[in-house]
Image 1 (spheres, helix red, strand yellow):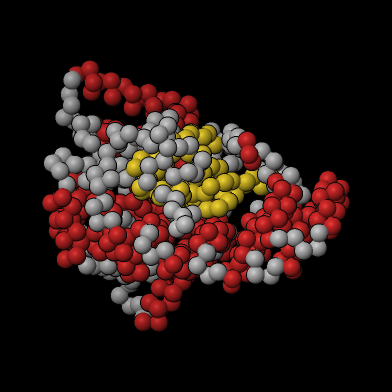
Image 2 (tube, rainbow, N blue to C red):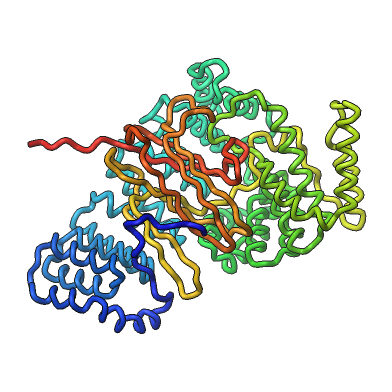
Amino acid sequence: MDLELPSHMQNTPGRPGSSFIALLLSVPLVLTVVMSSVTLADDSLAQSEERVAEHARTVWESGGIISALEILDRGIHDHPNALDLHKLRGDILATFRGPQEAVQAYEMALTTKPAALDVRWAKWSVLIRSGQGEEAIAELRRIAQFDAQNPLIHLRLAQELRKLDRLEESLESYKKAVELVPDLLGWRLALARARFDVLDYQGADADLQYVLQKASPGSPVEVPAKNQLSQLYESMERGRRFNPVLTPDTTASQLKEWAAIRADAWKLFVAGRYQEAEPIYRKMLTLNPRDSVATHHLGLTLMQLGRCEDAIAVFGNMSNLDPSEEDYADTMYRMGQCLVELERWEDAFVQFQILYDAAVEFEERNKNLALPAGMRVLSKEKIARWLDKVRPHVTGLAELQAEEAEARNGSGHTDSSPELSEGQLYTKAVERVKPQKILDTGAALIGRDADFSWFRFVIPASKVARDDFPTGAHDFVPLNPGDTFLTTQPEIYLVFGLISASFDAVPLTARCVLETSEMTDDQHSATQDRVVTSMNDQSGYFMLTPPKTGWKPGLYRCGLFVGERVSAYTNVDEVRFRIIEPRQSSS
């Protein structure tokens, strides 16, 4: 990734290797570099906690990781209850030896002060980065207990629980978040969806009616609120808990087993342990062949394992399972990627052209409407890049499509259905293969994005360190993570991990605004940053500098965008933090 560390982190500690052997080989060199510092440490057998921490930090930032840990070990021996020493030890280990030792160091610090939020956030960061989803959820719950008046912690907990399909628990956290900031109408829309998914239709209706009553005419939250009401009363979709979609002859024991292993499969999936996730997803489909979510995730798992032929076969089953709009849109996109990988160029062209036409249609229909911030839609630019990659291999098919488009434009005929030309194109491309389900571009993708898995995590932090590997790869590690910063904070870093390595140089943008009851895309940006991923990058960070007038207290929402332009059409994710005033001295 074409990223530069800030000046104060240019010499941040880098891991000399990923194995314990490499660690031992590096010890003589590191000891030589910092020997004088270690000798000085030995001259004072009972330094204060502050001096020990300052000395260890200086040695660490100079590259002496082993020596810094030794200084801390001696300091902890003299001051066994020193929270700051245990915390610093955890921070160093988080960038060096591995997650488990870092977690243990943070837990030692918490025995001294269980309510130390900075330590708990640091522990959570290690857990979420290392794929320990259940443990990370448990730590978020503890943070929420100690920081109960912070709406962001309840919102994050709700979102993380929802990812694990723990919808009932997620709803309770959404309720707490909205109770603390009742005027944020976008949050209430999320609460309404959470109620809908656990079949609380009356509660969902009440929340949506509240939004429509409070929203001003033409507000960007008005359209999604009306869409949710339409779904509530007119759509065949009845929420994620409506029907377990099990086959009629499923026994109670099979139902119990199916429900028990769903979270296990997802935990392995988000941790990148695809080899282990595959048999669990297959077991789920044995118990419940109509589980569209498991089918979708199995297809993604096979893609990550490099088995695109198998993935396409699995994705092909989605058309018979009545999947959600999100899963079906993503399936279309992923099938296109696999077809490119297999050099099935005509099929890939059709797949991406259908998605591109849907994106264009949505853009035309909504060109004069203010879309709400955070609304996910098809990224036309992203799909166009894939079409550009495929087009040289299907010149005849591409020319046919271009001629049809030119003929329509030249005749001024605007009433022709896009499905007609797509149908002709599709027939020509797949004469030798079984047809797949054609996407209903008129309705299925409104307000959706074709790619829902860019970021594995996004963690706000006050510092960042770079962990270098012998292969030349590197990983960025958040230091002092959290969701709350003071108005005096110099910079805020958004450290992210990608679900999979970038296939090309892709611009990523973070644009942050002060969150209000009704947000629009033309709202003034408080701060933003832009980076460009390069081949095989899987982590990076945005650096957010304070506005010219300084940080204003409040909640900040950062939209994350992929592509050259920042708009609703390229918005793929979001993250939040808050700014508060420093506490006044009681003296």
